Structure formats: C-alpha cells, structure tokens
Image 1 (cartoon, rainbow, N blue to C red):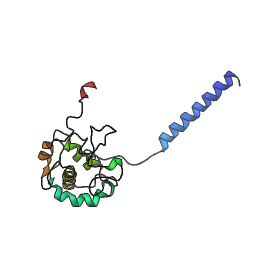
Image 2: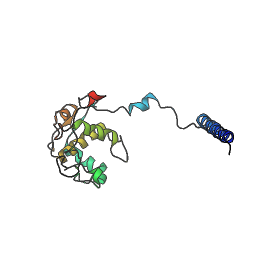
Image 3: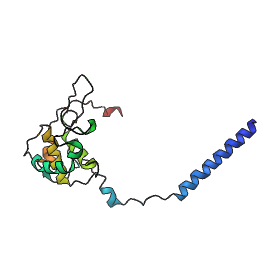
Image 4: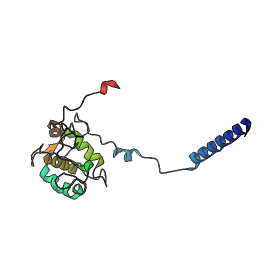
Length: 177
C-alpha cells in the first residue's frame, strides 16, 4: 500500500472515530441532574479535628445489637472478619511479616472510624445507618478493640478524646503537596 493510501486510510478512520464520538456525546443522555438536596447526603465528612460530626451519641452496649444485625455478616460477631479485609480486631503493626491493619492496630483517629462507618457501611447499604446508630456501632467496634468501656458514651466530643494505639504511626507529608 502506498504512503498516500495509508494516510488516506488513517484520516478516514480518524474522521469516523470523531463522528462516532461526537454522535455518542450528543445522543447519550444518562441519568438526571443532581439537586442540591441530593448532594447533602454526600457531604458527610467528619474530620479528626471534630468538625463535621452530627449530633447524637451512643454506647458499645447499645451498638452491639446494631452491629450484630448489620455488621456481623461480614465482620463476624467478635470482629475477626470473614476475610483479611473485614478483620476489625487484633493485628500488629510491628510484626515481622506483613502487618494486619485493623481498627485497633492501624487506624490513627477514632474519628476516622466514625467517618468510615458513616459513609461506607454496611457495605451492602452504605449511609443507611442513622447518626445515632453510627455512634453506637463506632463505640462497639472501639469496645471490641478494648479502646472504650461497654458503657462509655461516644459523641462528637468524646470521640476526639480517644487516643488510638497507632496515632503516632503516621508521617505528616501534607507539606509535600
């Protein structure tokens, strides 16, 4: 095939691809625009400094029933999990082998536990727990890791007072951005 013919084929292919792309962009209409009200459910970030926490509170004793009903299928009744990714208790960041990263061994802030449960759990129905249930389940998960007592009240203020075992295990690299 001559150079001229190859160039013509390439140009024709490019024109066809462009036409298909433009046509697809103009004809595909998926979904509907998101409203401000719908976006409110996505802005749920609870930060380590205490900002973004909703009102409410809970204890591990209260959270046990919610945990057993909504969390134990993946995380087991005792937090031992059904796979490496679902283990909540135990672990050791100082182990000689690959460390088992759990709530008790890895997570640096109790507020991060609350935030993750609130936005991502249960895995089959994220954001379906009420704020009260999230406080309760957070308290229970912290209790399973022997970080709070069964009747300790967990709320926006007390959550930030909990010192996690790996709180100093991270290096702040925010200045590198």
